[in-house]
Image (cartoon, rainbow, N blue to C red; front, side, top):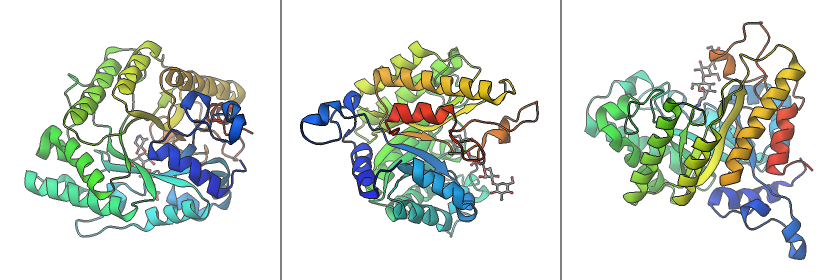
Length: 363
Ligand code: G3I
């Protein structure tokens, strides 16, 4: 990718600031004069980045800078990293990633402000609602303000739905629901908006794209949360589809598309925030496996695009060298997982081609 940093910033400003600025399917095209109508679409592509790998692996950094227009810290903005204890904010990793993004003319997304995953023990031990609201809002105020004007979009609430919701109103049990109930969600969105009124605020969720009642229930839950925020006039701008796709699960095209139509009717944007394809059950052969992975992602992206083109597409990592997938989905044949656009030697795989074609970043 050869786009100059200043051009990248202009594209991002539009996409993440809510002004769709990209190709024919997305409204105002990029380009100049009469040739504009023919301009290719440009959806910002980005990837999650690991701070430790960025510091140690120059080739990894170069691949990110070359391929991406935006980054998101994979762990650097999470509570266990930022908040080792009640008194401390440790911005070291997040600041290093932000500096890398700035140096390379890349945008940055924020992940995440309210999530059950890996909450530090001191926070998980809170029982008083008053203290909970103070800790949650002061955290959000401090973190969002620090990157005001640079982080253009935040995953404010991540994964609010339980894996198997009993109803669309069911929420995951963790410190904020135990102390504040469902109200933790509007509290978090209001605090993020107060800290950076220009930031795009995202409700992010996984496992919403498959066939089956559990996935339908999760979609209904996300829609209910978004509707309730909008009805109360609380700022929310987008739904994030994590899209940790299982290669061997059947996509529910109809279910996904009617979900997206509801989101569109609410005038919310859609982002693909954590795309990768879990290949644990696929054949050993790399070419076969990579083709199935690419096809799964293409089918998903196309289903989304037919209803509402995403304002950004991010993969959860850029290279198979650094991926969360083996934490939960190691392969029984002993070979490494291949869920991401570049292989472990940073060579592009068919998934990279799918994404480049989809986003218009192929030249
Ligand atoms: O950095 C240490 C390393 O020093 C140590 O040797 C090693 C031993 O276990 O652990 C390393 O840290 C791990 C880190 O990933 C590496 O990046 C943590 O234990 C592990 O908990 C952490 O997992 C992350 C997980 O979220 C929990 O925060 C994954 O990287 C990250 O990809 C994953 O991301 C989530 C999204 O936030 C939300 N959506 C699902 C997605 C995948 O699970």
